[in-house]
Amino acid sequence: MTEQQLIKVGMADLNIASGGEALKTTGLGSCVGLTLYDSVAKVGGMAHVMLPSSEIARESRINAAKYADTALPQLIERMEEAGARKARMVAKMAGGAQMFAFSGGADSLRIGPRNVETCTAILADLGIPILAQDTGGNYGRTIELDSTSGTLSIRSVQHGIKEL
Image: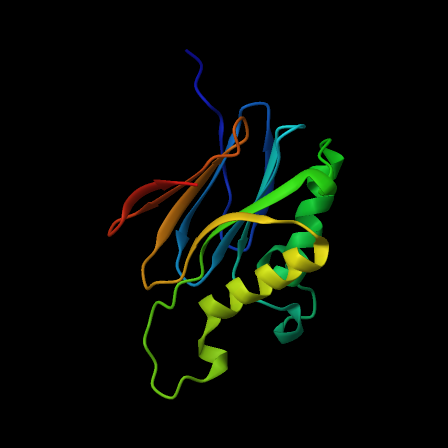
């Protein structure tokens, strides 16, 4: 029995896995854990997206993995360098919760739903289908993507373990 190598993806981070490795990120609240998978090349990718658009960045040099609009192109590029093809990629995502209730409903406070909306729109523009998602709610999640099967495991305290 071999132990599967686990690659951790931090907040505002992204990485790829192949050859039976797995990707894992923890602490998804309003952040979105976006995964891409090419079943032919058996290459997976994961981005822990914190915010929807780099247009709201205040820093002069941005961390591309932090924003949906910059993380997705970078993740696709890294996966293609590892042998994946964009035309074969499918997406799964989790997170995007609204962790706190705010009165007034200002759009700037809807970070989780805006992250999901932006990721969905970008994937549609890129022609990458979303096979499954577990988004919304008001609870945290930990996710793990298996590069052998493309299975996305989602763990939460309130809702147990799901596999997409």
